[in-house]
Length: 370
Image (cartoon, rainbow, N blue to C red):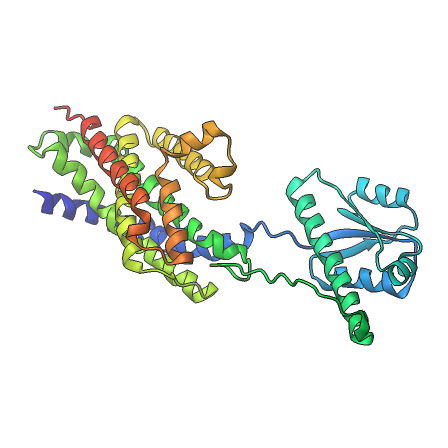
């Protein structure tokens, strides 16, 4: 009986010309575009430089800010009030004020002060911009000190050098962090929405009444609904792997078999949730809105964009019941760190539990009405 039900499901799937194209095109285009826009790197910051010194060193510092690629000087007011006006009119995000006597103090006293003021209406942009500019100023101070030591060896003094080592993402490329999570989002969209519309679509067409009069057991019926989307999920995930390798040069540091193992449980869980929604929904619109609510909740609270540890305590407890959270942990760990199954036992247990619970719920919530 299962064989014939699967044959029916696959024929229904391929008979719809839109669905096969969507399964292939949606992951391909989304993974191609989303990593380019889902980027928290802050660049092209508007900088206002208030130079009261007008010395070679002050001009060199201003040039160094633009050479970093993070800043562009959009205003050079002569006064502090002029810089504040530039911020109020959105011509500047950050102000760098170089005081009079900057070069004199630097040469004579071996130290000088500058002021950095940021517009933090956008906290992320203001905070990261201030950090970038502070780093540039510190780097400038290091360059000057190195030049002095080279020209006057007697000034050489013991010094410590800190060389940071960034593990797993040495270039601090935000796309490397986001691409595995976007793959999970694609899998959630494909394997969540399609099952959520499956049974309710048959209700509207009237074919569900014909299924209800057959001796098919609920267990077999729900299994026949899950298996096609399990296959579809693997196809979509494989396409995502290909796009990540072809366009971004990313390959998992760990084993693909480990990812597919966890994906098996995740797809069953998210497809089971879709079937549960489809059982309760009476129209396609109801099914879409219900699934949309759960998908948006999982994306926003599952750690895709915001770290779960940064959320309030109540939100962290809610995220413990979201399968997307655990699969994102797995994808980032396997892709970036090369983790294996033994290091990811907790997500494996959680995803397996979600798969069992939603599958059982889908069976119980499906009512045969003759």
